[in-house]
Image 1 (cartoon, rainbow, N blue to C red):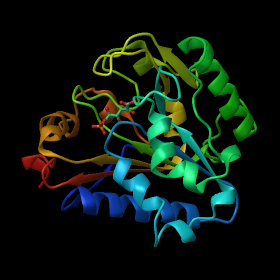
Image 2: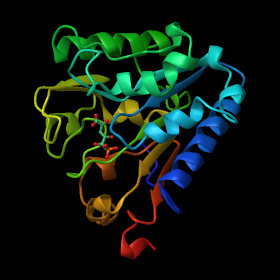
Image 3: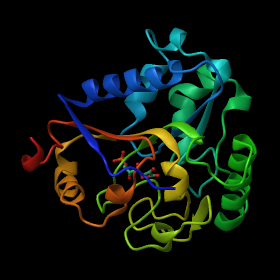
Image 4: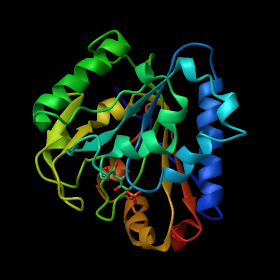
Length: 245
Ligand code: 6PG
């Protein structure tokens, strides 16, 4: 399935404006149709503010929680109660207060990364209703993403086998490239791409150097990740490289 090369960069003032712009886009994607909606969340610290906004007005009462399903793009291989667990952060920030338990789809971390990856792939395939992705019918309405200091996104690290994976939907990553140095489980590029919108959130001066490389077209995972629909980057002023101002 070919992902579109187009990437739209939207500059915003600061982390508060970034979270608000992201929340508006989440709501717009949810409101775009009346059926079942699938959103793929991301880990790291960047989306926390967005998640907290969704649990509060004016967003909370506008979200039809019964028909929205929440997945996650990657997980650190630690128990669900560990503070480094990505889904734990999302649960605490909004899901446990707002979403029906059956609509929360965490990546399991109870056996080993490879086995948990294949269980999650099966869960995604069951939800999608097929084991091959069709271009005309994306798996997700929205996929949230972040970028790490080495240019990784989800848990697809530069030069790691997961970067070249085209068959498997989800894969185990035995060793991380950056902190936290625990094994990971990650959705692969073709599965993350199967969405109406892929939305990156990037804020802070410490992200500017890696964004300069990503937008400079280096072959880094965060640059290679594209949606078959729209790929949008929300970037705050402090993170925005000079050459894209
Ligand atoms: C993870 C992530 C990872 C994250 C980036 C950005 O599990 O660590 O999903 O891809 O999105 O590393 O992290 P920050 O938002 O903390 O900068």
